[in-house]
Image (tube, rainbow, N blue to C red):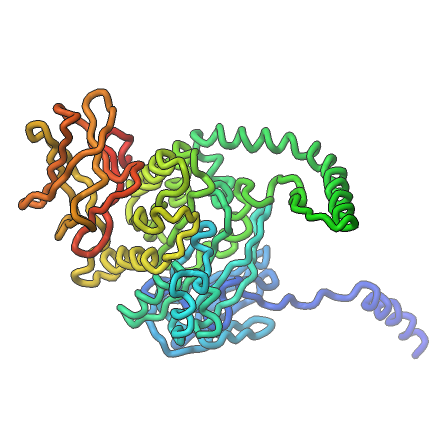
Length: 508
């Protein structure tokens, strides 16, 4: 009898060892749901992750408890009801086949900080940044840095962790994001989380999804450019080992001879998923975090697209629109840092600033003018990040947080009207307009031939500015701080006038 039972059971035991039953998958959370996280106040809070298909998952936070079941792909998602801000740390508990307990979770304001190196620029490298970091014992400010990586397909996760602002940690935060967060936190007394999602040297194209490119026929030339590059990838990959071997041979020969060797190592051939390839950073850095509750986004990028302003006029609005669709939070605020001037091509920079400003035609957008920051320093990375952060914060304080008496913009061109042989210019945000210097500079006017000449300007008692030049007796067009070495119009909030030209495309 015992032998017969063993004969029946033994094959089953062998099968279990050879083909073990699958163990339950541990319930997991999306990448931003970690200890020390900040959850967005006053709106539904999405929480998501993975589990076994059809597994029940329960999320508990403060007085709320919400349950759901994972779908056939093992994905689950719940929404917590809107909550008022709280600096009192709490635990967020997720229960399924296992239990996850997140500690020190706050409720406040969350802002996405994206772009290229000027957004990535660390606090400790900015003017006064080391001192600011040394004083940053600010448990109400949290920072998450998304790991920089590209991908040729959308990913589900990113690497990074929430870090509390302390003197030992704040120096590594994005400087612009830190100064922005510190000002909001100080003004409102609300926790602030900043998600640094930036990549130095990045163009705008890798931040857009494939869907965004495919949905707009105006991007056909851009896609064609990438397709032409793609066709060259196999040949470039085949030739790369030989190029690398030649470089290594030269390097070793120089070392043996004791001579300097400064030739840079050849880069591997670029292709889909490579740095600055279309959609690469969207796939790997933005898609995995899209949907995390945020108040808005700060965007500091453009240097790597310089010279392609016509494309940028379409690309930046497309990025804003596509991210808003991806987040499913409606038209969340999107604030742009307008670039200053740099180098020997001021006209190119001027046209690009105008292209950036064109995105302001979208709702709930804003722009921090930085034309005066770093002027004349010939530094592609102006180290005054404090004023950039404060100007962005002023836009948020005035338009979102409704802080009384907050001016968020310098003088903005409204219209120019003929006044004899002069032009009378009207501005908005014009309270207390004044020059930084003995007299106004930076204005130019032109007649029908559009040949601009430097002009005189003075602020009239009615708050307009009269602009004239003996060389133009019938002025029609006017521009300010377009491609000049110096301009100095500010308002009473000490914010600079935005560059403009009356004969250009304007804001569409």
